[in-house]
Length: 393
Ligand SMILES: Cc1cc2nc3c(=O)[nH]c(=O)nc-3n(C[C@H](O)[C@H](O)[C@H](O)COP(=O)(O)OP(=O)(O)OC[C@H]3O[C@@H](n4cnc5c(N)ncnc54)[C@H](O)[C@@H]3O)c2cc1C
Image (cartoon, rainbow, N blue to C red; front, side, top):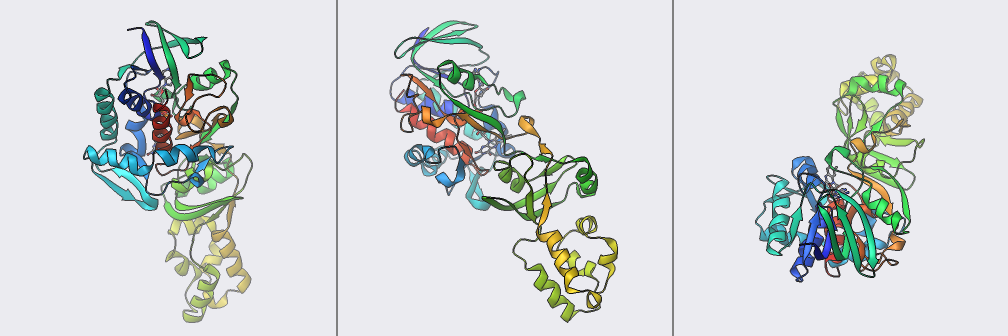
């Protein structure tokens, strides 16, 4: 068949959700996927367990030049709606910190569920297909040229995601189509991504590779508290991925390695109670030995508490509770989970996800300038935006 009601480019999270909803409305839906497999990112997500949504979802968990844009879709297809589907398919799941919901078994359960829903809704999916070009032939009429011949549709949905993990089929296709149709695209950059370090910091911190500790990391306007992981390349772990969304090159990170503890007061108390104890002993009760050795100089560590001056306690406190470091950069799209920026939301209806200037053209998911925090928020945006567009295409 060559003539379709709806063609969706991209068989990822948002494209499949949109296809299901449009199919259920009786629309003849074709999904075109350039990769060999559907749902590559779903498969690899959440360390193979897919953090598919979160108990707490609100606009405050998203970054966009228009913070209000995501509200409409998120309120019409909520985390509870997705959870109901997961429960209907009897997929076992569990909650982790901060309300994050993961599959007990495998991320593939989520993909299989979406594919089963697609089948029931009569959706056709074609993989390993190259789209060579798209033209609008009339209002609500598009011609899609592929390596398997020309196709036409009334509604065209761009669900090709962002640029992260190029080996997984990511492409700038969605941004190029937006530009082709005269829609603005906000500059893109890698998000939810580890930091690399300048050579001197990298060398100094290399003995810490493999250590993970609870930390609070801040930039002006954003603070996160989760695990920080020292790696042989730089800084990673959930707290670093979270703050990376807010970081601009050259900015200093402020890191509290002992969040929730008044270290100055603790050192003073210990001085009173155990004056002969070395500073090292007190700190080693709080943090890994290797970390203390890297941060505090040897001489100071050997000192008994009784001989330590208040200024020394203040210095140690500053070193551990307001460690300041300027990353060299990020690891980029190679390891990023998401792409910040994208198709300007001012160009898109928040209700239908249609391009305001181009009747029949829709954008859903990560290709839009809407990026979630780590924690299931990016999938929830993909499900919600795909679902909403599915009601109108
Ligand atoms: C390693 C990793 C782990 C992640 N873990 C989580 C997690 O646990 N929870 C969470 O919420 N988010 C997670 N994310 C983010 C999440 O995967 C994405 O935000 C989400 O998949 C975006 O959905 P989408 O439909 O917009 O794009 P995608 O799911 O990326 O789908 C886009 C699809 O379009 C296809 N495509 C691209 N170009 C073309 C083209 N020219 N023609 C045809 N098809 C094309 C791609 O192959 C892909 O299948 C993770 C991301 C990564 C990289």
